[in-house]
Length: 585
Image 1 (cartoon, rainbow, N blue to C red):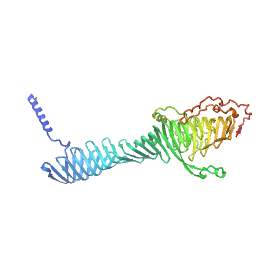
Image 2: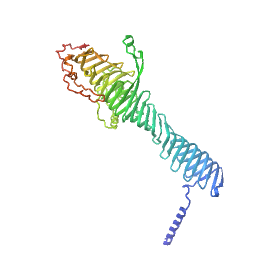
Image 3: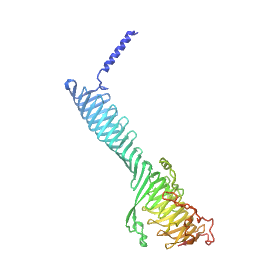
Image 4: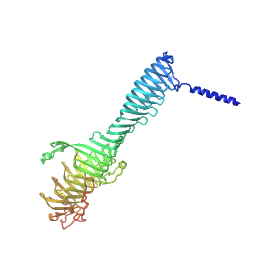
């Protein structure tokens, strides 16, 4: 058993040893050993240290680090050296090669130059120069950098690479290429473990779907998904279509893109200009054969709260929430709009009665892009959950626009769903489903021609409405003129009405009775002058170009037309149950 004197002596010895240890100079955490085919030691300045010259198969060991080279110089007191000729530094999980390396055994920092290459887990980095901190496992690369990582090639002027977390930080311009996409930016980070790029400054992403431009962008290589923020623009490939927004989320594998924050869609079409002619030998030729004076550009612009793009067999753009659309002299507002590029269709409205297939529906349900057939089965056009979520994310969706309204060729058109059909990028027809109502300006501003029905079809030629067909409880109010002078008003109610236009004015009106006989009423001018605004169809509403009700548009309709439950026999003779028609010029 140790006595008290022995215990005190042990403690004294321990503290003396610790004091001698602390008094020694600070050296490398781990000893450095070296060997070579030949070595020669010389004294340094003042003979205080040795300088070793190593030749052939130089090998330096420090802990788990092994350095090999053709030759080298080692400064023993400083514990550092310069190695040249096929230098190779090996650590668990990575290897550095270069033509020259300056290595400090105390700080464990290697400064490499000349064909520098680091092979890390799953990645290879090449540059002109590098500074590798082996203790912190962080490397700085310069003089032009190339990174090969899981099928991607990334180039940049300089790079900071964290080998432990496998995070690359690029500066001085960066380009990432793989088999699916090419990304360019001023700077950014690449996360090798998750194959994610987070780039900033004039970012451009190009793939099979198109090109994205943005201030900042995050890209996931595994799914090709991109999330762009700030001045975002998407150019569709092979189409003159661009989508803009504050933020855009693209999912190429799903052929889906959504934009929020002031989204805007711009589509530019080149339209041939052919002169109108009455020569039957010319007008019977197809449009492409007509003598052309040249072409013009028609630009479609759509703005909304949220914008989506579907690309696949049917390319579609869908706008949701406070939609505004312009195309030449055509303007429209509503809550939902769809642009189907391949079929040259634009639809506006909720789609409860539209005959245009939704992107998510079967293509077998779609009608072709020719003039629509009333027998076509309507298909839902209600927005998918993605639309609602995207629109809600953009902020409050206070409904300020009715759904929908179109202004075209001095006419205002409203209804539940409106479809605009084009051919060769030129407007051909406008179809209105359910609660269809048209208001047209005549020769005198106060005298507004009106037409109502369950379905309307406007036929357009050379950018002018040439015929309107209203079906299902059709009703109209049209103001007559004797040359340039007002000449009363004509009111009509029937099952179907067809109006032919000449030079923008109604030239012929045909009413078709069907199950209900047609009803005509002619009001002389003396009963119309001064009270023109009282001649209104039931449901008359006139809107400004932002969708608000125009001033005095909703006044009392003292002479409004109401669809009768049966024909008014005092105004029209009884007809057979077979379909009968009347024409008025």
